[in-house]
Length: 518
View (cartoon, rainbow, N blue to C red):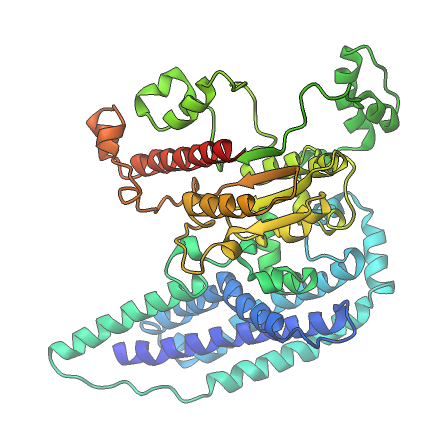
């Protein structure tokens, strides 16, 4: 029986191999049809990483072809003779079915990109409000619907032929063992198949935290807006879309949105009948300088550096003591009730940069906001006052497309910690350790004699999955936190609180150093 399992599992692997190849072919067609440049000359490295990363990212879905074939074909065939006799035919049917969904997704993406110059995004959800007859008319008359439907026939034939050829490749024969070696080999095969699935399912790694995703696309690819989109397989794009449903504000009409704004304006004595009125109501003209012009301005945003641990209820944790010292300084003005400009760090940063409340719209990911400077942008306002503006990010600027977005907001310079720090600098999942990043930033700031300067600094260490070597970094939970033993015995809580403590110390050490320098 196990010999049959061994040979049949190899057929499952062969079936699985077909679809990364098919996805790569679709990627080639997409690039050939939609590339915005006349030649791919000079893009060899970017193309290599586009296909390499796209291959591994696509495994997030493609790997399930192996698992499905194993569960639906191989395991039943061990007990059902008919299933065993027709296993490859069943695999062929499964493969053609999956190929059908890949084809539909690909055709849909080709049409969507031709219309909107983007892969699937939230605009897809607006389709349910569109006139269905118009959509059908556009599909058949503008985007060659009949041709796309007819091409499906030779497509399925070619895919079926390719699957059959690959399935016909001879299998590795089952080696025969006697005694304990027989059982050890069989166990090893089962474990190897499980490891095989998870390794490919997680994109070439056994760690879920290291799975490929949009933010971790190689920088050489992310810098090219088109190739970064080409990296994303069609079903992966749809999966991303499912995890990012349309923001509520995008589902409302102009009239409904205006009605939401109206009470805030009328409460302050204004009136509004149109969006132009609303914009005028929010205009504010500064009254001029109230303090001497500083030589340096720092806006430091600590990842997840939140208010609660400064409150008396959490005083015994002692993980925000450095921040408390800074707030207690007689020269510090603090507002303990402010909220971030977004529900998570990314929209908070985008809102602070752009002067536009992001509201989860992910403006930094939209190409329309990579060209030209928004008049509300903070760095632009400071440039008008004569400041050289700098953005310092503790990770890679390609995460979130800040390579494009930060300059568009008016930053003169944007720095990645992954570029300015040593190649072997220790890093967490998001970026370089805070203290190393901030030390390097301080060193470079001191070398730049151009004044005045504005520095927007964003740290990254206080972020999951909380695997930093905290004890080596000075955090001894049992000595620092005055809490019950059951809290210390928890597996994750001391790691989360210790990472906050570490970030608090790194940020405030940087503030002290810059204070002495200035």
